[in-house]
Image (cartoon, rainbow, N blue to C red; front, side):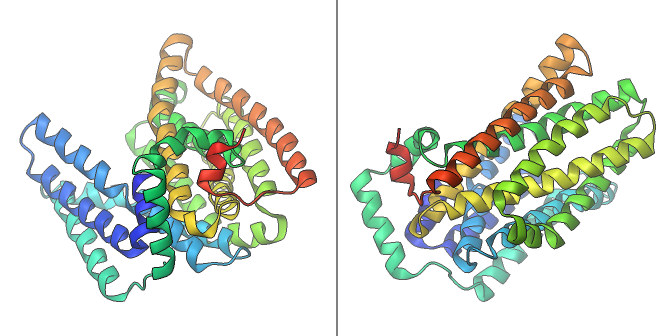
Length: 353
């Protein structure tokens, strides 16, 4: 959350540029690495600096959209990320045939090109007065106040949204971390078939987020979209266990892709709407922290359950967990509608019981 709060204090554009340059630097170091410690240094540096990009971009979208169009804005961001994740490995695979280091140099050049474009053409979305107010607030709270918010925010009005953010990333990382083993053991698929399946899922998610999420959120609201996303995951998890060929797996993963595509932008949009306008960066940073925690623990837990109980069980336990969260979301969202959804700041959310 540090970079998100920094974007509240100094503006969105500097943090976006920092993240892009950090991406480029880490990729260059990765391409030059000739030892394992240097690889670790490159990845750690890239993780620290590039972490400035996503929460700041999410806050930028919150700055430049109203409440009606925010869900669509978050959906377009997710679509752009999905297309990058889908086609990036394909391009990298072709470049690696020329040189193992070429994909990293190409990525660095691309990040620098985007940084140059942003430097000249991207307008700052954060007013100077708002930046000054955020700096004064940070001084009153202390420089490490935003780190404490990562945990204490769970006790506030956005706590359940943070849990949803964690679970969405946890489930996706769990699937990605064990699907290769599952498809090999259950279906006998190879690397090319698995790559094709993830490509199909990525394209479905990108198209859904680009063209459907915005209108659906406008008509149905974030909470209903979250419920749809939550219930689609256990259905997909269980159906995967009964797949038997490429077509059946592709159909199931497409359904899961639509559900996941609906869930993530809706969670981000709802967190943004329930937070004060002057702390969008800090809140988006906290949401992204829980996304990152899910990506860390999802593969670990999935692999552990896979080894301990068998290839079916990561999907069974994941499906049951999502069903429980889906039921809880119905109860909590209905309760919030009756009480009225509060507009909160990070500081207020952190101190709530």
